[in-house]
Length: 218
Image 1 (tube, rainbow, N blue to C red):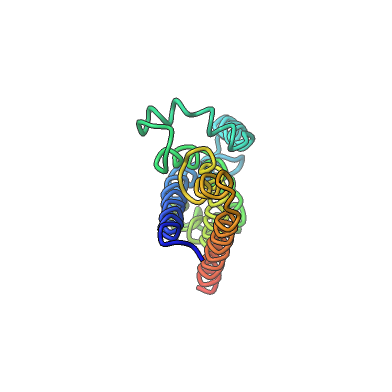
Image 2 (cartoon, rainbow, N blue to C red; image 1 turned 60 degrees about the horizontal axis):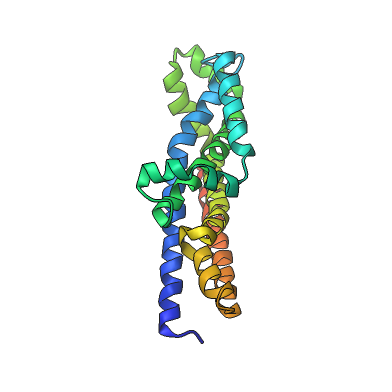
């Protein structure tokens, strides 16, 4: 059994992980969703066709997705420090988490919107709908179950990334596993953090699957 102090550390680390992941997912969705919409709507033959914008944005997103998280986290330390005043801690870890998730979210949104039947878009155009109306009243509502699944996938991935960020001073369960588990030879603490991470992933996936199914039925 763990001592009361260890239990407090575990609960604190779990809260930090949820905080990091929750805020990072929200910020990544806020930026990634518009980017994904632009990727789809600027394609050839779509409502805002612009091959140049589409090609440039697609290239930038591909570059962002190509950088391993551990390298990205170190590479943007100056940006992180300028943005939040430090490169260590839970709040600082959210910066690379968000930056890493934005291109990932953009591609998930692009995939979800491409699943929308083109006939529905053509029907909206025939009725005189503007591009903005088509985006908000056709594309997003039709793709909502897939978009929710994308949020779930993003959250699950960021749980793993947050553990990696914790290993280099980002706080959360990764930090607990390294400082109190690995460095102090406490295998039980390391095992506890792994179990909690598994539970978080399973809970997040189950919740996301339920929300997606519910929206699909509607």
